[in-house]
Image (cartoon, rainbow, N blue to C red; front, side):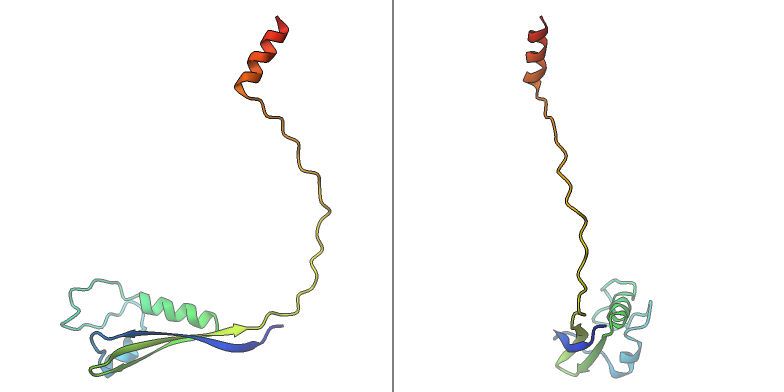
Length: 117
């Protein structure tokens, strides 16, 4: 059995538009987009952050977000680093001889015909 040894952390800092505090709880909801007048031209389905968080959680991690006025937003992905379990030796199958291939080129066919004549 493996155990969590450490946590890997990746931070993405966006110095753009701040996300309002009241919108933060909705940010990771499926098909939900936070509307803002400065980003209304940006398309999307509202699935990216939802799927990212779901994948992180399925691997024992999470994604968090912080947003401050005049400082933009910081997204933090944390994933556990798992120490490998004691590996049991894998029994290998006996080696088999590689198959023998006979390659015939275009000249070989002409040579065979001349030998028959």
